Length: 375
Ligand SMILES: Cc1cc2nc3c(=O)[nH]c(=O)nc-3n(C[C@H](O)[C@H](O)[C@H](O)COP(=O)(O)OP(=O)(O)OC[C@H]3O[C@@H](n4cnc5c(N)ncnc54)[C@H](O)[C@@H]3O)c2cc1C
Image (cartoon, rainbow, N blue to C red; front, side, top):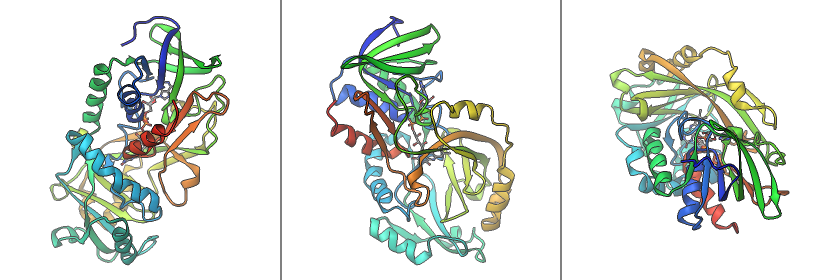
């Protein structure tokens, strides 16, 4: 934890204590041998933003029939994630992918072919699961191998990992400006419980996800276009018939129902209703402030009503509350729904790296990219 020394000197500063920031801080100590690593997080705890408020799916490729690379990388990364965080991975449910008869960008045949191409197992669902769906609207139902993660377990791991590695973690602390301190060093201004402080560091990793373009100072933002979305996931208590089931209806204006292990509920997202509003990200337009000021009400009732047309049992679910979060996606993947990583070295400040993961298991792609960087 912080020693409160003003203007402290570090080998690396990580901005953002989500899953990516924590993993990168750990990587810098364990793999790159850096001794003095500091991490600042604006919230009071680690992993409370997008790394908690998501659909908790450990991707295994199925979700990306329009982006072979993302599907393939998910297949490569899933076994590594399971091996590195076995306690966080939840497998005690059956995951179904259902292909809609109308408005789907993928047919059942294409989906099976795609699964074979990426080497993912896929089998016709057993009757007990197939019977959950409305055959007039659903063409085929497949049983697949896709799991969920428990974000609370990841959060506990994160705190222990950084403590064990002696990383200087400063919670409730926001990075507000970065500028060159010398030809080889950067100065980051932070605002925390003790007031304004400065950290001088050779390397800075901007892992602030929705806040990626808001760091300020000499940082003019990333070159890659980013879209921000205010998203709603309805947290629901499903009827017993669905308690050990996850469902994704492909591939269009449909829904996904996934166990949300850290709350013992299911999360329900809907392509039509989950995104409430979106904008092109730019410096000075703080997404967190936008979310805080957002007044839109829940669309959970619409999500449940529409999902109930495909799967009548889901309409018996009780909406407990909703999780609202800002989702940051690369604009270039709007059409194919791919989730590549962004790792950008700033042109004017070579020690400043911006990282955006896209999905949890992409951490391996990010770390491979950092392996190749001379730090
Ligand atoms: C609705 C939704 C559903 C999703 N579903 C899935 C899914 O099912 N599976 C999957 O793999 N991925 C999913 N994702 C994506 C996944 O959540 C993200 O890829 C991942 O959490 C990003 O981790 P992160 O550490 O980059 O971001 P975050 O966890 O958001 O961490 C960034 C941190 O930076 C902090 N921060 C921001 N600005 C500053 C600053 N200036 N100073 C200090 N701290 C700052 C924030 O408080 C935050 O804690 C989903 C995302 C959303 C929003």
